[in-house]
Image (cartoon, rainbow, N blue to C red; front, side, top):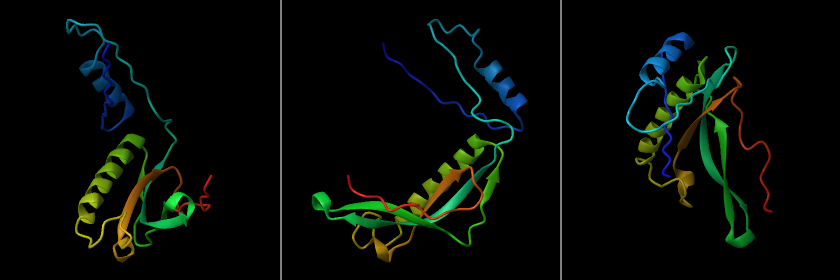
Length: 145
């Protein structure tokens, strides 16, 4: 049996409106002539806050094992004003858009991210976090196992 799963995003003023949209647009009473199951759940509590952080990112050499390996590292961009959201879905949508725009901007850099010359270029990454103050990453240098 082929299984298709869709993620549905409803962005509106409040949870009541989102529930109404989900109930009316995707109601289980709809008859499409085939069997289907409809599930959705709320992914957060009302008191959660989400933040979009911006980091300048680069690759660090991890070590010589197996011909050498690299890992991603980043530091917060000081001039970036952290964005704050009460809704994780909205934060995720905006973060995804910011990262898509960054990937287009990267095409204008003289060297790609994975190039040995990438240190001559500047790259950024956006992420959704549950803490307000951005931190450098990784917190501990990875080691080869």
